Length: 379
Image (tube, rainbow, N blue to C red; front, side, top):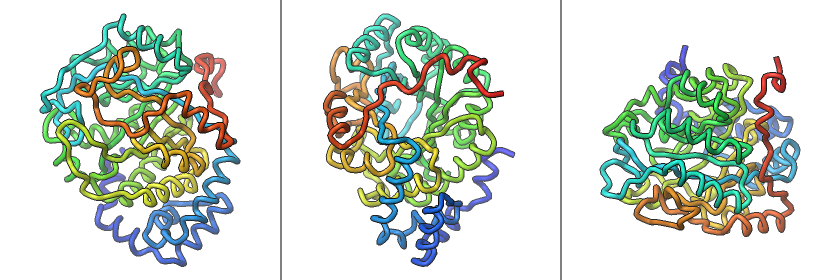
């Protein structure tokens, strides 16, 4: 059975009704269990419910305690490196969408190395490689990029189009550490509305992509929904359901969840459902209480003051000094090539200083390629 079958067995309306039916007593029970390190999907539903809003301070306290207990007072810093904005999909919320009349660019091997040099000077050892979704930028390009960058960085992740299992396995052999595949929305009709053209319009193929990543033995799998397309509470439930499925099936892999909210871009759309700052804090804390091992990521989409506070409550990884256009680190920002507008434009040095002032240790490297050798892995 695939996760698509699990997803189909949970009608959206029933999930949302179940979340809204949770009572204050359900929330108190979930918090008591979470304090003991226990939290199942029913508890998670209570923690993301409207009934949990008055308990946000207690959720934040427990989330902070559990995060420090597992991860210490550390924060992994990484940089998103955009290698191409070529895209053959129509996505209503994305600046790379094929329908937007923007200049297209794919970095050459030499340009990728120039970007790498600029990123190393900033202190980064963890890169997230991103592209649009295009047949022009496919497996051979990804292999070449990994081969170029592997000698220079401790950890390389990708956020590209969904691939086949063997393709993920091939990338792993070339030094890939993690794959991020965001479903965007788990509401199928809304997904179809926002992805009318291109390979990304195949909801089920994308839905089962993390399973293929796990089958390929990739070290880490990243999940998430784009908040604003649909009700955030239901999106969180399906993300947690997806996470639970993957952890049981691919227990050797690590997992992360990100919390992107819709940001301005070329061809702008308004969010259908607003996710307030308090809502986002509630979601972050609920995920931490649901899974103490989970890596939680907050990007530069969020404004500085908000990131400064939320990083203390459960987040374990942050991007810093981000550019969302190809070549942005070596050549500077080019608005016409950007995927979306960032909100926190502070430099990596400034982010690191903020973290230290808050009592955190910025971590530029917590993974080494030697960990991927067979003799370094459990059997």
